[in-house]
Length: 124
Image (cartoon, rainbow, N blue to C red):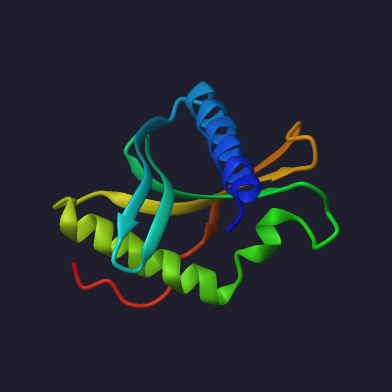
């Protein structure tokens, strides 16, 4: 991954975190590494644990960012969320998956709460 793409992703995550905090979310972790990959943002919104995937795109040439969160990505995010909950000993809370898509000059931000259901089985 090029430095420019890393910088673009980091600036998108900054913007998403700022936006979510303005909506009452408390950011618990950024770029949380699991053996399966990285969770962009983990947040708390009221009594819900929220796993947030941030997709930042310079243009719509390859579609909107949220379109990149298809079934395979959802499955990976679900597994990473389970890994987070096991490692952090999180029990007895509801969780959900949100997607924040940032387009173009990063002035266009789309937040999709509860973008998808957990894929796979959680035996917690």
